[in-house]
Length: 126
Image 1 (cartoon, rainbow, N blue to C red):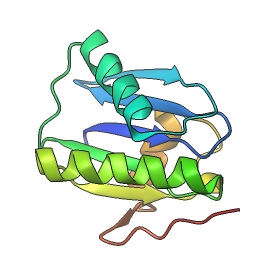
Image 2: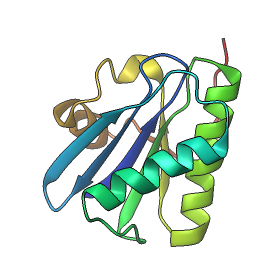
Image 3: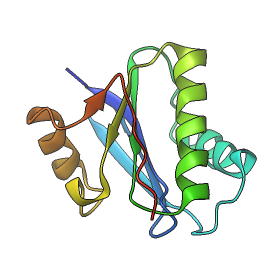
Image 4: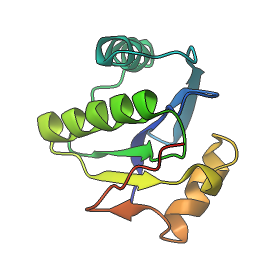
């Protein structure tokens, strides 16, 4: 069961990140033209520091697989994979149409209905 997670939704439109930690959920909108890993990583680091969270293997990483901008999706996937490698987190993916709005209730429905993809992430580009 996924309890605590970092969610990365960067497809080129309405880019955001979210964090569930100890039954609290936080979100932050990002600029839409994320064109580098460093920019996304800096946003994530600032976001988790702001909410006094330390990522570990107890946190799952959930990433939007698209459809969307090639650059944005590749960047978010590579950052998510890096976090997975460093912290030993589980990595999951979802499609854009499965999560119309980045709200905790919607994410919990994906988790409960086992709609998140594990093991293999196949990005969908526009």
